[in-house]
Image (cartoon, rainbow, N blue to C red; front, side, top):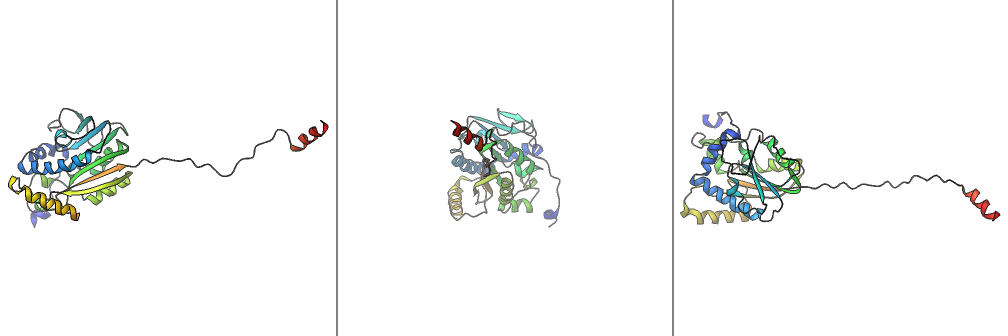
Length: 258
């Protein structure tokens, strides 16, 4: 009970990023990343455009291999992390990207481990064009992964160092930022073991849970679209009467003389 209630000092994303990338290189991390990649591939195949940004833990080459957008780059806050060749080195709370210049933004567990998730999501939404996509991958707080993190925080490092946000809270933030949520799906319903012999059971459990739409998976994927608000000018019904240069009486007299 003491470990459950003990408050730990939270670290920012730039300090946790190397250790988190090391965990995704393990057997359990690769298994989780493969499930997320398959789920992303099904949705990225319908996303088109010119520019796509990625911020998170995994390398963009691992997650965005099937993305049809040609120019892809990573927002990297630290030099000690593995961010790939195409990257922009800047603070995740203040992106060096112009407003409404990106067709899609992929957020991979960045909201789970940053100290200011609202500001990060605000920066990501600011850069997306009207009609563009935002896809967010995050750990589900109502899952077995978070339960293990709470019970065994020391042995579950660095996953236990995060603050997992529910999908409903992120959907509320997106709606306040002018987005409409297209889809919310969950994955990793089976405990991550990293054993190939249990892949068939994991696939079967995932199919049944996806059919029943159970919000109990280890992670979730939220896809949202930025709404394009078009302002239509409304003309007033009343009209200002025009001033006449010649009155009707003068015109009538001239016509009689002729």
